[in-house]
Length: 404
Image (cartoon, rainbow, N blue to C red; front, top):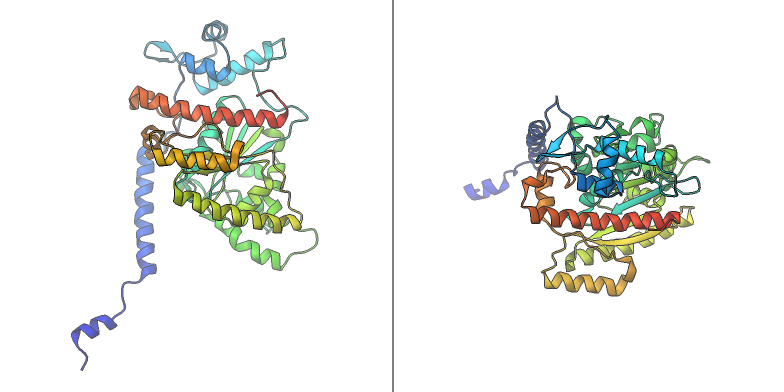
């Protein structure tokens, strides 16, 4: 006779599929509620205004000269912060245009690429989550746009964290065929890349958002390879082919890659002119990166044999979430520099509560107000981000043959 215990053990347990679906629905509902609270439907996400000192640094002029130029431009907004004039991102864009038109010398205030300078496509990647990949990509795109470059940010991660940072909630704001998948898919529903590009609240910064639809490319590609016809564009060339449709509109493309080595990542690598690998200076992360590099090298060898382009202008490792007072982290950074030399960026991205707290409300450090944090915390984080991105800007200029 079967005991009660045996009967209980024989009974099926909770259905995992149902539990996951229930949790997914609950979490999605709460995230949507949070998004609507943070960014109500009647309001668009905006970026803060900038002080005269910040504006002068972004434009590349002295603060005194900024006051003189601004006095000649009555069309600029007249907002104020703490009793001092403040400039919107639109003001900064207009200031650049005004200065560039009036410049008689060799100096240019609009740093757009010239005729013989190739579009720079930067793939930001890492195999392991939590390395600061998306934070790095979003801040890079915003920094370059604030510096006057025409930037296209592409969210290639199905988790779409960068899209959320830019105010596009993937479950609500991004519909079918509105990601890059729409421009690289294999069937008749493929559309021009211009139809999936969106403007943002920063002039000259555009976005192609992401969502789970991007995973369709991973599922479609094996079938497409089996049915391949002569003349078909192979998977590794599809992102580059899509970007080429809009290459004359931009100076820099920033791609936030998925945290796995699939067809999307390989296609992004083939499209890229430069690669930035984020790495958290901990042993487990570095060991994971070792596996990532080994697999990437093997796969690039395979697709290069099939005609993929694998030449790059530069490749760098960016140390992220770095704590200067942490002895083991300093040892790990020294270890990485001893192996990779100049391929490790000079400036690390510091770990900061200002950056992480800003992320809680889907904001970057360029968007939050300084008053939300202690002055030292905010300034330290902003200096770190600016140093990293100034170094990247220097690499872009070097690739164009300009003085950094």
